[in-house]
Length: 136
Length: 136
DNA sequence: GGGCTTATCGCAACTCTTCGCAATAGAGGG
DNA sequence: CCCTCTATTGCGAAGAGTTGCGATAAGCCC
Image (cartoon, rainbow over all chains, first blue to last red; front, top):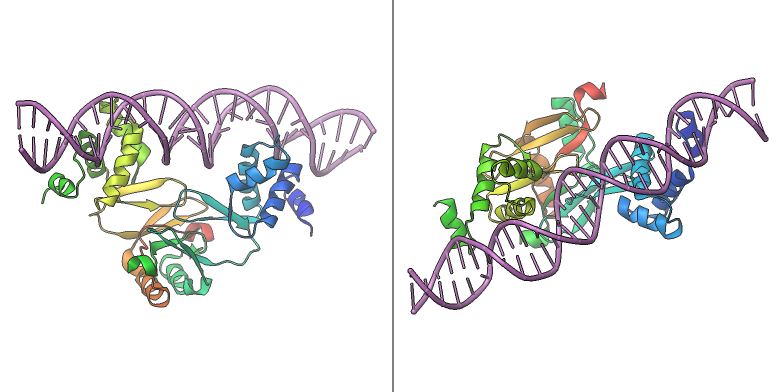
């Protein structure tokens, strides 16, 4: 089913603004920030308010089209939900980021589920520490 | 060695403001936010600027007296570095937080170190997912 | 197409955090 | 105790994200 129809079926509406946010996410290769999306949209449609972008990202996440990730800063990174999941290693010293296959994190997820009944989404937040270079 | 002496030995200074931040962290049971600390200090010493609190938390972290953690929101949580480390599970639906023994996370840390030379600090960021109740 | 309901929008105000800068005040040396 | 050096502070302002609210317009029904 097309996205617009799906959104409507859930009692929400497909607005110009919402479509622009989706398009911006489609254009973005990897994780983007709300501020970046807002800026790219406002370059062409200055009348669209940043708060609308923030609210739409949240709405699209509820609808299942978008997810967000937290690296080590306070910035929220967004991407399409259909992108392939992966983990992140972030170095607290040099700030370098590294993507890792999600299955490395699987054993932990399994254990948390077994021992705590907790369904972890390990792609959601980055693992912080010292990278090979900085650990010396 | 006492903290003040240690701080001076590192070429930094022990100021009234810095001591107040340390005291506030000592009073706080668990993780606190900068804003909370600032508010508690300003209740008695309104002349102390919030920016000073933020800067002091950062400085005290460099000095090794405090650490910070990111749960699922964009807020930075602070605590004394000598508190015992533990992991966090945060439910993305109901927002509940749960502390878990750090050794559950050890195997992953070991593997990241072996396969990526990465020294993970798994107490630093919370694991996000669905808690037992919300996972149904 | 017109009317109705209400999700969504743009705006303005506000909160939390960061930053540049001039003034202040720890700390060491004489 | 005074002097000097510079880490640190308070302030003002800017960033980044959030929220309340009245206005707008999407979607449904006829």
